[in-house]
Image (cartoon, rainbow, N blue to C red; front, side, top):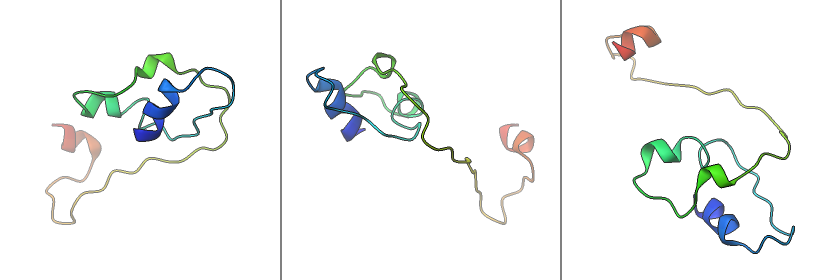
Length: 71
């Protein structure tokens, strides 16, 4: 979020580039009350990698599927 804020405030001269996972542009707006930038102001230029997302819980947690977790 710190990097995204700095890039959002940088002069639009083509010398600043944000390389980031999804969190500053997707998840932070769902989990943070305030941010120093508008995620909608950013535009994707290129995808340089992909990464799987993982959700983990304690072994003794009483659910076995994502649907059970949501319920």
